[in-house]
Length: 268
Image 1 (spheres, one colour):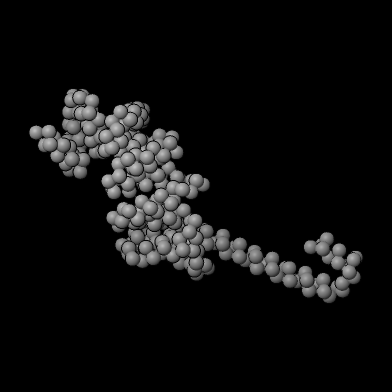
Image 2 (tube, rainbow, N blue to C red; image 1 turned 180 degrees about the vertical axis):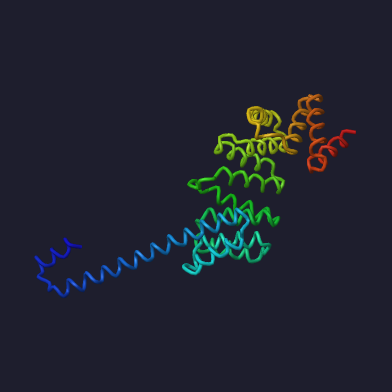
């Protein structure tokens, strides 16, 4: 601003009054910009706090912060998406969907909001819509938790009966997550569903190796049933029987144990 004023004084001999007025205008504009930046920061802070309270199950505190954010900016896509989460947790699906859709209307490239919306649709049993939203979210190569998006995309494909498509999504999740246990199990199960037993064995063995190294990871009903199906495909009846016994003793009321019993009935 000082260089600009010197230029005008030297070259155009503009009066001091004009320079004073010009300086005043720029100062006012800078002030408005600063206020706008402060408001944006405040909205982000409120959204972050509200999201943390949602994760804790404290929806009342979450609502207080998100309402403050919306008072500052009623069109904030982040605040609208978080309000959708609150409505979802409070059992208000119509209001939740409206909030999610309003958020994406304000900012279609808001991938986190799209993931929230896709998860909501999945919870509502709208698997085809959820699949489409997860697929759009997965296309964002800059999204920091893309492995989870592909994992959820695979789950939606499974619900739609698309075993091969589910396996492809889980493969991406395994690759991006560098082989975390959840993705490996999901991929192994999807490959078994698709009849790709040889490939399923490779990923299931990786899962078993991780499980052997970590006390925090243990068998689930899904991992047991998948292991049973793989063992049966290999003709390893002892292994299948051993896993079936664990499934029966530890998870007798699980959906997977019911599927195992149905599997055995089909063999008779």
